[in-house]
Image (cartoon, rainbow, N blue to C red; front, side, top):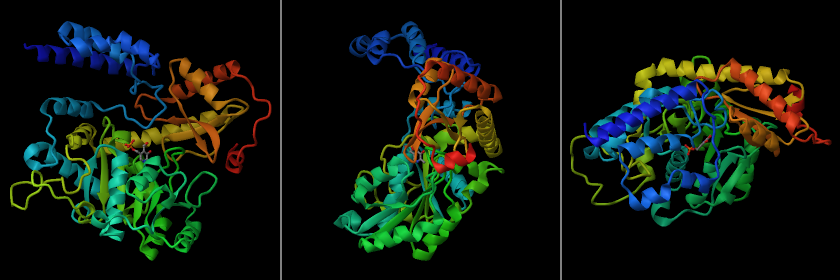
Length: 477
Ligand SMILES: Cc1ncc(COP(=O)(O)O)c(C=O)c1O
């Protein structure tokens, strides 16, 4: 056996034990050592400068690295929108790590290219665009997918922008709750953040379809043309969905490009119970959908999908003789529709995740996490002094512990080592936040969280004059 094989076997053994221990709740769920102490512990300086790592040193080093990870397979992993990768998806990373076929050009990776084409077609069917009419490409993450979709929208409204620069009268209609990558895209696209005109929202930051005309009125009054209107399914902070059907009708009536950021919630299209949350998505012009959130692939694997196939190539008007030519040849290239030139074999992760669980299995997984989040809601609402401002629609849930600093409480919970939770603000107010993603998280975890919050409350100072809760929070308490 050569050294690579022996090291790979050692890595697979250690990683399999790591995942299995994590699933059993062994080990702290998250680790936050001092960065300099960690760099020293991992002997990074020495290895970088001297090299020479061999099988024995590697087998000693990897467990120390794993000790400084967030254990996403752990039942107490409740903080962020990242998947505990399925076994199939994890194997895809191993395959890519060895074969390294960047496949945006067919001749550079036929297998990976065909796999990507097929999973994108499958996603187009699920969204309702249809694989024949629609088009899409996988990107390295939802932020790039959002940027690509808005670039396509820009090409529709201002076809000369690629060559002549961006007209100064373009605007983006989007709610305040929109993911920051949308505003970042507005800046990158040359519109500037000031060109984002805010849609009116309710107390829980959902778009108010009955107030869309007011945003359009403000846009026209400012002498601007809407480039696109962005809706979210669901919002990153709350996990609540914008009502896509009336929003799509408004956009169709006014000829506005509708972009749906379904980075998180697109996967609910596979759930018989929850796909109704995305009703109307099929009438969008573009959609993004991250497989690395709820389809159990490792980061990164996101899709940008458009209703009309030609809209993606229209977004890019590039010439480069070493990548683009008109000669008829076998296969197809993706370089005319992707922001990235060198693109990893992203489709293989999603394909192998699907190949293991099937679309039905992944749909059941999504339903089960959404349903369990409703049980977190029930459990937390029964606890005196805890307020959940809404019934969760997805696997994201926010809550507050009255009379305490939420961030202090979070620190206490994290210090316990068995639960990882996050925080956010809604309408300017601080909340604790759960994202129920790990397949091993169960009803036992609900009890564990409540117990941890009781203990944390005992250790953090009581705030004597809490601010009044917003109307929506009071209603459900
Ligand atoms: C709604 C939404 N859109 C876009 C993104 C950005 O996706 P990525 O982190 O893959 O770039 C996120 C990430 O959390 C998100 O929640």
